[in-house]
Amino acid sequence: MKKQIQIASLAFAAMIFASCGGDKSAENAATVNPADEKPEVKVEKVSMHSVPQTETYTATIESDVKNNIAPNTPYRIERVLVDVGDNVRKGQVLVTLDASNLKQLKMQIEHQKLEFKRTDELYKVGGASKAEWDNAKLQLDIMETQLKQMTENIQLVSPINGVVTARNYDDGDMYGSGGPVLTIEQLNPVELVINVSETYFSQMVKGMPVDVTLDAYEGETFSGKVSTVYPTIDKQTHTFPVEVTIANPSNKVRPGMFARATVNFGDVQHVVVPDMAVVKQIGSGDRFVYVYKDGKVSYNKVQIGRHMGEYYEIISGIEPGSEVVVAGQTRLADGREVTVVK
Image (tube, rainbow, N blue to C red; front, side, top):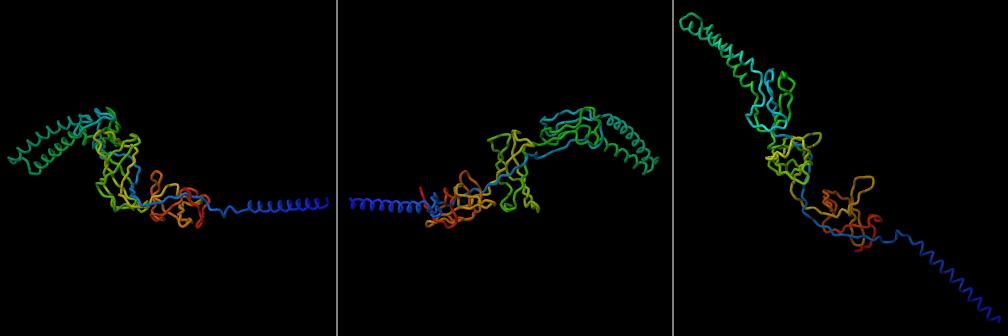
């Protein structure tokens, strides 16, 4: 009986010892440092692609030609024959002015003609001096010049084909110096002026195609061409003006419309990466990408270019053929070992 009790005691002690040893192992397993684990990442190999170098500029549509219609001296306006929005043709009469002064001048000219005829006859027989003849002829010439000018000014005509965009006077008003009677603008073609970075100065040439879109016509693209490249660069903005002309035979495009002009400066070969691979550094505008090689990742600062759908153009910072991390960046650091998963 005594022997059985001793055996039972030894067995119980062994159980206690085993239990203590088991707790020690569990404690050690629970305190494994997570930083020692290899983060799981997904990678993707990148390569060179042909990337269109396009730039988009905003501008406002302007008329190619704009004329202010007004007499050269004060006149009473008899009739304004057109209104805002009317299409007009070159040579069309737009405004007629009071002709009472014209009638009076014509009567004065007839009287001066008789005076000159009398002086001329006297001069021929020696009854008038050369100075008197010259003075009579000069007065007649002055009046006839005034008549020509007044006749031309009594009717104001359009110098271009266009549309009336402003009317500042009504029938019976006295024209003074308060702006033109009418403004006529040519709508075919129209133009816009964009300010281009000096980086593209050597690439911008007359005749380059330009795609123009307008908020007024969503989904429609209008074809334009570079018509003028200004020869100087603004020292404050480091840009230079470029005029773009748009053919507008249907007059759909109107002055004042908001436009976006897109210019393609050609294609270049650059590395392209998924946008998920690009990480922005907190507190700065720097971008970086983790590159995987030989079981580790390295921090690569990159200069990004255009965002093309789900991809970024990389100007510098990554070599073609590199494998970049596209998922799992949150636990990464420069030089850290990782596990690549599919």
